[in-house]
Image 1 (cartoon, rainbow, N blue to C red):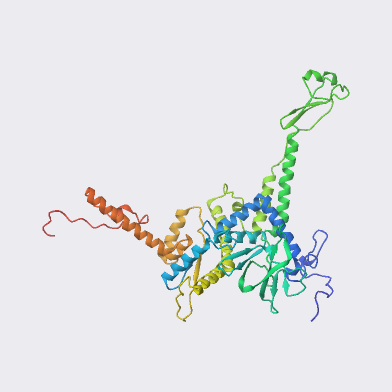
Image 2 (cartoon, one colour):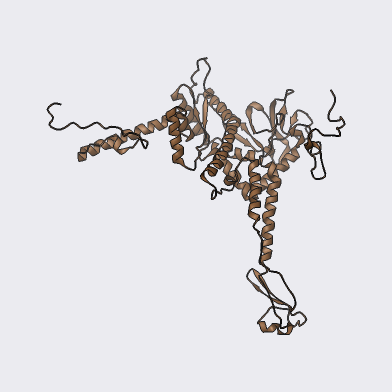
Length: 494
């Protein structure tokens, strides 16, 4: 087989995009080479990208807002919570209660809840590309930032790729987790080698052979820098223009300038009749006869500034699959359909991130923690399926509910889907972070309470109320539940 890397390049390119010109520089075999992603982007380059992204998170309002918006909507106010799906309702409740209590103390460092760990996992993917969690023997998670996953100092093994040790077949078998020194820097000679079964690596590769993740906002770093520079330059120009307010001329000559009133000038300098005075935020110039000046009114920012800024923001939003309207929280313009389309596109993006979080962190955490609880006797053994296999791993992760522009229409659509069999009561409840059993039990309690109140009022005032009079459970347009007619008094036929 010939080596195409050394084979002479044909004079004519089959694809025009592979031909470099003076106006378009070709990147193939220059910045982009036919190697795997981890060796193309060295550990130093990956560190530089992370540092740039973190700098923008600290100092760029757009990046800070996007990070918080992703975390808030993907994870929600209560986190993505589990609902056990075994055949035993009692075991399901016990497992859910155990996990809920564990979530409060999930962090081995005793700093964060499991919801907050979920939130920072989303931020970690945006800014760092990946992160890890050590499965501690005591049943807690120890979060590891991306910087701490690195090769040991002076490592020469080709199977060690940026902190991950691979088998001959390319399977991760262990991770090198480093500690920090007193100044916060990574200590290359102080690390622990953790087996892959005791470590969760949360990453989203873009290539099959890729091991370490790249920050999601890395492709727009240049655009973000250009946008920030644009804002700074426009502000500087506006401030500079504001320093000059008016220019006044006179035809009377230098000798008559004094007739214009008190002026600030160099004392006893008759050779410099040009004078000016200061006001808050600006200056007024008095020019010599014959001198001219153009209008000092500021044209910055001009009429194209906002459209151009919006264009840059739309480009950045397209990179992270976030519409401009949601990225900037600007819903002042556009029709109902346009706003709904923007929300639907945004929620699809968040739903994809929720699936990634479930597969990379949540499911494995449940499997590990619940299995450990059953082994240690903190939970009873889970029921068996028809094959005789334990169902302890069967769980459904409930994401936060997304709000829509018209909640009434959305609820009506869900009711129609339920009536037609497209949705179940459980699936609708799961979207709202609760279970069908809890909703039905609470509804039954409300009906029983309403019935008790109605009986008390009837006994006290002689009325004939029923619980339906206190709780309206009918949809608009449906027939009202017929209440039983009271028996006529004095009817001998009864």
